[in-house]
Image (cartoon, rainbow, N blue to C red; front, side):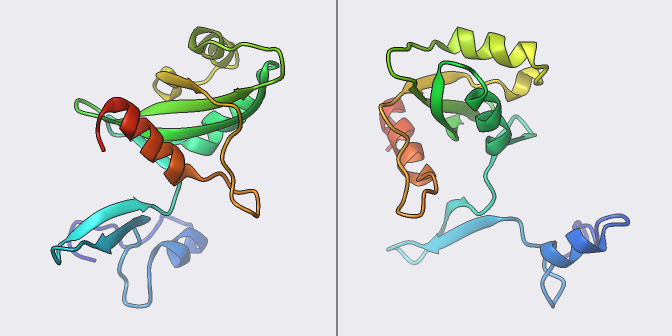
Length: 154
């Protein structure tokens, strides 16, 4: 809420109702937690968006595109920290049995389908199975922690 926050979505009262609370505070979709030192720190996004150099990328859009590739059994897209762009897209892929998948193949497939270049994954991690919770939701936090560890940022 403040002078730099939009008052509503233009001609979209449905979106406005979801984005603003009763006191007209805008819900950014970011979740924060209280740290041990009594400081507030960013925890994760409630919306699955990767912000790459100011562009918003839907992780689900990237996943759905990659799931269309014939060699892919399962996939999950996560934000990977980047000093220059803020975040880049990392795609975790569980290939179909007996198949191998490369980042170049996936990018060529996505390019054929017409996806914008900034939405292309910039790193591929091959994984036996995408981690899911008991109700089948992808455990993105596990994957984000994994990529940070691999990048030496943990």
